[in-house]
Length: 61
Image (cartoon, rainbow, N blue to C red; front, side, top):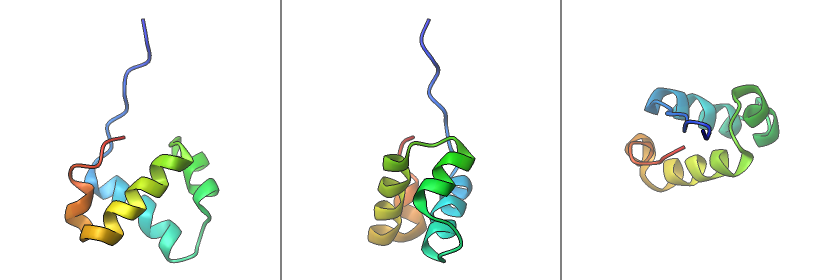
């Protein structure tokens, strides 16, 4: 059987994006620490920059 898809809360996505945007960590560091693909972090960041916190509601992991 395949691996089940991880579900991330808006708060988890927001914390991930903010860690990158405030310059504390690179996308690669954040992705590795949280077990998320780097491309996913970039997508969450784009959703956030386009629509703020609300943009993360529909962003899937």
